[in-house]
Length: 502
Image (cartoon, rainbow, N blue to C red; front, side, top):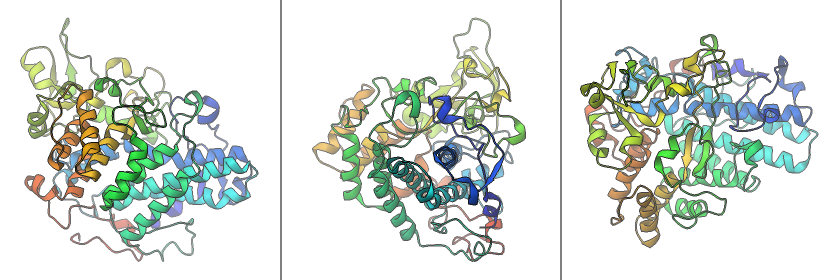
């Protein structure tokens, strides 16, 4: 765990946006650096520390090495794309399933452990902080739920990871060993169950949007259970989240009427959102600290845009800023979704627009002419203030939304009237008729509904379908379900490389 040794200075200015929160809660005025031994003295400092724990959640769509862009690239729905075969060695290697411990992006390990370190430190310090007990309990619940989320990503990505529940010290950091995945999952479950008991059922929309709730932790726990194959437990907890299919659940969540409204940039923290990552255009993010965790924009937006995009005067084509052409959509996904009502909101067919003379662009690496419309920014989304325009997109991203939990519960149930109702509700929202509920139908619905949101690779692995669906990408069963551990994490430590990787 060599890289964590640089994290012992907690930076109070490590700010994460909670969405449409008030400035008082979100923005922690930089006061310099504080040693953890003397920092957690009062509620204000504990709040700043909690903001720091949340900060790692931005990994979903923040920075070049983000979860959605990376996981899309390794699935059958997208290619890595970009400017060439060497444009981002990690994302290119995962797309072709040729990752090594040398080229795997270390941030997928480090950023999650940074969040865990911050959670561990806050949990250690909370008992001594002068603040009301109910606030302490809530902070503890949020920290445990976030720690669980970060460990869930780590165990899915790397499987064999250290289980750290206390902050590392200079004396023990090189003695850490990997835990079994079963032990990690057990701790994830424990953290989430404890968090569910302390988190609020709702939060004030104008001051605390984005903070975790009881329903958010239940949704994550259901996803964890399903990944473990604990279908009975998954169905039970997800039923608490979902309520009556197609209706409003006990927390006020319901499917949006229009699927396309999910991708309206201003429609943050809507009723379908359960866990959402907030991004801002007001962070003045610039190239000097891009990828360091201090940039708060949505980097996926610029990554997936077409290169050198233009449109003639009077064209009805969308007004797009140019991007870097990552995550281009495969012909396979295009063919599967082209007749689905969700097609237009999911895929922008620039191939057709260019052929019709309505738009032009320069094709990047592995260009198909099909781009991920869910995250394509429009010109009105471009930041005109400080910082680099490319790094200050404000579109939020979902980690879990209600349609996802509907389909997860249906998968856990497998059959029956409730599974049928859950599948029907997702299809009905986009005007599709009922079809008999089967595992094959649920798999296809997840692909259509959640395309481009970073779930597909994990779904294929969970179903045991990855080797078949990704055979043309070089996927090797028993190896490529997980990443290799970054080489630098192995040097001077007791950590062992994952099987099949050098």
